[in-house]
Amino acid sequence: MSTDWGTLLSCKKSMKTVSDFAHGEMSGRDFYSHFANTERGGIVRKLLRSHGVVSSKRLARKALSRRGVCNAE
Image (cartoon, rainbow, N blue to C red; front, top):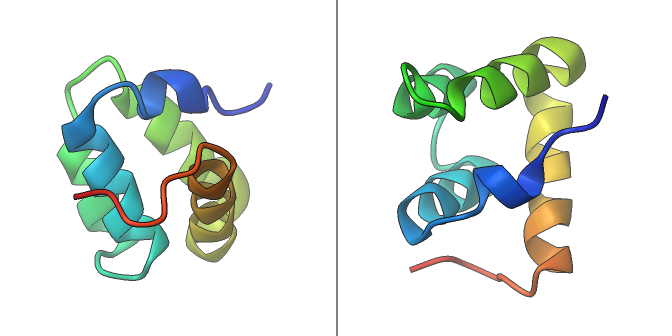
């Protein structure tokens, strides 16, 4: 099962959070806590558990670049 980046990047606030995480401005714990108790929390938890923080950041950068987002405002 792959990560549902479309759901994770569906609004500007979550896109900014993913961008901050991908560019090293927040830790994995902070990243998960931003999505805790939301419908996206399971996606983030599964991403971090299956790939680890370092690989998750790389995957997040890749997902953002494929969507043409350099640095979300």
